[in-house]
Length: 251
Image (cartoon, rainbow, N blue to C red):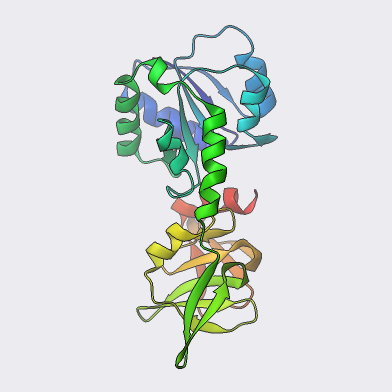
């Protein structure tokens, strides 16, 4: 199988290459492209690629720009930091995807799905993908009803700096430093949010990008994130999530 990787992070492309070779030594990686410009140039010429692994955010723009500049009907498996809820459109349109950091078992399943389909079945219909993506944004929750004494108050999602678990109870903290109890699981809240605006930073919290004040490098590849309003404890991003968090914050 001849494969092309479109990825601007060297560590990510090297890891994917290693995993692919480990799963199938017969896989031939034809090229590793790190930008929209390089991808357009490569795919505008005759090539033998049978499958493309493509990150969404590249050094010089969004990978969807590639499709507006050159015809591309090769099946694609997206590698992305988006969560499953945000990119459900890809599955609706029979497009496979892998969440970063890439798991070897999930990669194996994706390859099996690719091999089980014909190129016709996995051809990319980018207009349908983009339409579905924009439509899905309408599903994002805009308001939360929160407990305040004996009342339920409507709080706009955009006014919430972060959600976090406090002794088993989920709370929402607004940019005005007010804290409210939300009668939902953090996992369910994560699925309702716009993933451009919110990120599941660790098991305890989901943060609004507007609340991120600074990021410091911690030991062993971890990160410490400063939030405003101040978070009750030190906010640590694991090594496994560090790349995805930086990708999200740098959009």
